[in-house]
Length: 189
Image (cartoon, rainbow, N blue to C red; front, side, top):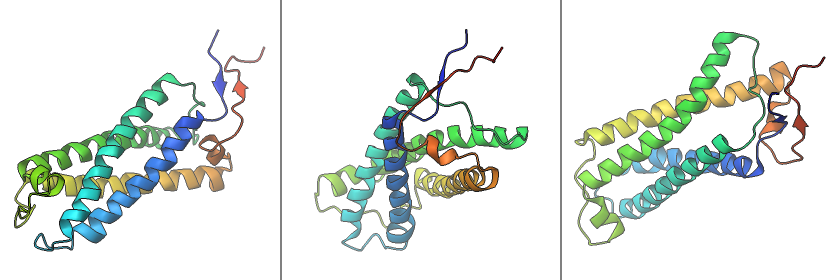
C-alpha cells in the first residue's frame, strides 16, 4: 500500500517558507543596495554589516530547520508541468535554493573570519574594516552566489506564476495555511 499524501504543506513549513522568502529578499536587498555601494570607510557600514551577518546566520539556521521538517513531514505530490525537462529544472531549482543558502552563509562566514569582522562588527572594538572585501576570494564567491541566487529566485517565482495562472492548478494553495486533507496515492480500482 502506498502512503497517503496531503493537499498542503505542513503549516510550520508554510510559515518558514514565507518568513525565509522575506528574510532572503531583505538580505539580498541589503547586500546589493546598501552594502555594495557603501565604502568600507563609512562608519555606518559596521552597523549594517551587523544586521546583515546576524540575519544571515538566522536564515541559515531556519533553512536547516526547514529542511529537516520538509524531510520528516508528509507533503503534497510534486507539481508537474507535463513536460519532463521543466519538471527536472523544478527539482534542481528547489534543491539549488537550499544549497545556495548554505553556500552563501559559508562564504559570508569565511569572509567574516578572514577579514576579522568578529572583532570590528560583533565585538565593536573600533577596528577599521579592511579597505575592500574584494581581495577575499570568499567574498567574490559570495557576490557571484548572490547573483546566482537571484536567478534561482526568479525561476522559482516564474514557475509558481506559470502553475497558478498558466496551468491553473492552484499551486499557491499548497504553500498557504488551511486544512491539510489527506489524498490517497493508491490507484483507484
